[in-house]
Length: 165
Image (cartoon, rainbow, N blue to C red; front, side, top):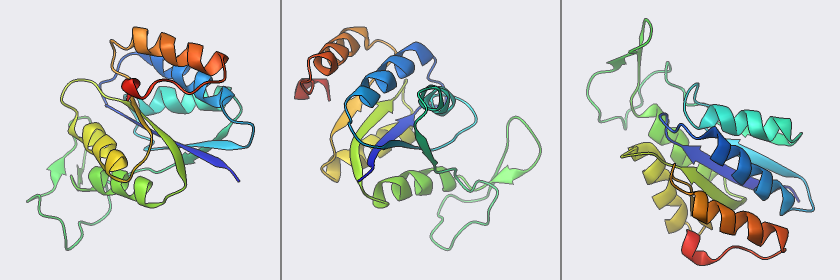
């Protein structure tokens, strides 16, 4: 059975070195096929997650948000918003909907979040993952001590302490 790692991160996360180290350590934990499920945002943490996982030769399970798709009946955000970096508009509920869908798809072995600042999408996704009873790790830009403990736990064959979550 394939292991599923859920990766979620801020669009402003700027520590690809932490992302690469975490995902390399995660990949060593499994003696079976493992895929990375992630949001496929064009900026922030998703891009280095994709690059690091692909460099390891492991499977990717992208979940892009349908930003240009129509709003749904349950959208309560008001008018669509204009893109800041190009023409057109988008449904602001598409990202949060995608984040919920990634968790609802199930089969997740562990969740690695890369939040920075008050990034609501990443933090809500981590909250939903915890509520679903999933093993959740948060890696802020200041996570070097926790990263060291995580990598050392990986090398010794032990899971890291729950205090890192």
